[in-house]
Amino acid sequence: MRIVITGHAGLFVEANGRTLLCDPWFNGAYFGSWFPFPDNADLDLERISSPDYLYISHLHKDHFDARFLAEHVDKATTVLLPDFPLDDLQDALEALGFSNFVATQSGRRVDLDGLRVAIATTTSVADGPIGDSALVVDDGKTRILDQNDCHLRDLSALRALGPYDVHFLQYSGAIWYPMVYRWEEAKMDELARDKRVRQGQRAMHYIREVDAAHVVPFAGPPAFLDDPLFGLNDLDEDPASIFQDQPSFLRLLEEHGIERGCLAVAGSEIEVVPGRFEVFHHPSSAAVEAIFADKGAYLRSYQQRRRAEIAAALPALPEPPPDPGETVARLAGWFEPLLATAPSVRAAMGGTILLDVARFGVVIDPGEGRVRQAGPDDAGSADHAFFFEEALLHSLVERRVEDWVNELFLSCRFEATRQGEYNETVFSFFKCLSARRMAYLEASLALAARTHERGDGARGELWHAGGYLVQRRCPHLGADLSKFGHVEDGVLTCSLHGNRYDLATGRCLTAEGFDLFSVPAS
Image (cartoon, rainbow, N blue to C red; front, side, top):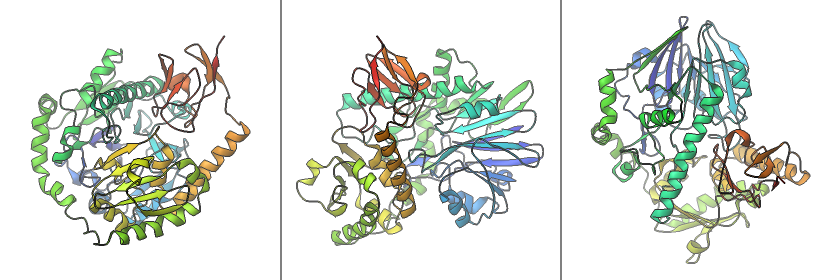
């Protein structure tokens, strides 16, 4: 099997005379905020443009590059579809001209002509844009796992499909937290350090559980090339940066006794056959080492090469209307019918949400199910407030973007405040700004509420943690706390998504509505 790293979470697999292209990403994403790191612009596109099979793990823009797929990938290729609850991914691919699809079932093998594959999915609203997936590819002699950034909670199905020769997985940050919050520097530093540690714990858990012969960290970090965001890049292995790079993570693995890690970047080729694993760097190992030896200089040079694309991203946005009331009315006409259909969502969202674009503000009031222009007292009373440019808001409204997480929030082109703990339903709401997505979110929350009222699975199997007996499954999304849980100073942290629980009371310290069953062990 021959594997080309196409950049970020992208792979091009050649085996048994067949080819498979996975998650190709080449163009700037999220309003020109993210770019592939390292630069993959000189990759041989002709080699990868006519694959036999195409796999897109999920709809995040650093995996689903619509422009690249439209301009460079043969529409006759056969697309392998993950088993998602909604047809959004297939609809998006059909809109680009793809028409040949193989629907898969989560964790079930599919025999292709010369290859055997399986796709494992996660399907909660918190998983990507309502769904994420991981891919197993088997050529009869070797087997790889492309986990990319799919945060699987139950690895039993994947282990049953192994053993694996190579494991590709995310290890670095791919989110806006905590950098966008208007917190004091000391608090920001503490939260970012904690986030980086938890990312490493999660990745190492997956590495140990999958137990592949070789591990390739990939699917991050992106490069932030626009000047206002350039400081987000981790240039000197800063423990308070969530955007750790590959060599830094490989050193972390070695510190924890894991010596199976391998460096591979865009253009690197991996040859894996029984008894042999080899990485060929393009254009050379020295060139790859130079990227990380002076990362700041490398990124500044990269920035200059992409300067025109960065400059075009924001000025191309449509001009907002002169009357703020027009934008408020359009948001009300869009959001209020969705809120009317989703009482469980409204109840879980809590207090008001403020969208502040300097010239005016918009208040989303879940309790009333209404959207209105903000008044002078709303800035201080909103549970969540988001501050960003009016042109970005107008762009979202003009295009009626149904997933603001996959457009605005991941861009990091905003600031935020909140009162109280993180409320996941607020961000889920902004992922589900269409009738079918909102119906899925409402059904998910309504089912969770009924389960909680009946006590179904609330305790389940118990686990000893820091002198307490606690429910083994995380109240958030059911992760196995005996594997993902870490106890320190009376606090249990689930490294899968970072929820923290006070063992003495069971109270969730990081989000509302996810308290843990916990009692003293003696």
